[in-house]
Length: 87
Image (tube, rainbow, N blue to C red):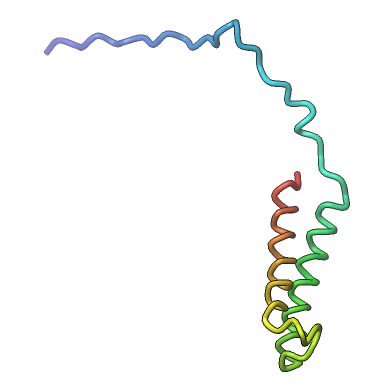
């Protein structure tokens, strides 16, 4: 049986008119306050929700009612926003 021919692929060469993007500025490590603030926001959010439920919805701010849930979850969502920028 005859053997089939082997195809050779051309070696990829990037176009010379496009220069690579500068990556030095974007690869800097984040400041120390970013993870510290994110962890603090998570702890504050969880503590806010726990205090709200354990106090039979009287604390931290009774007049806010269910908006206390928005504050607790808002703190945790804000921490996720910070952690997405952490390197």
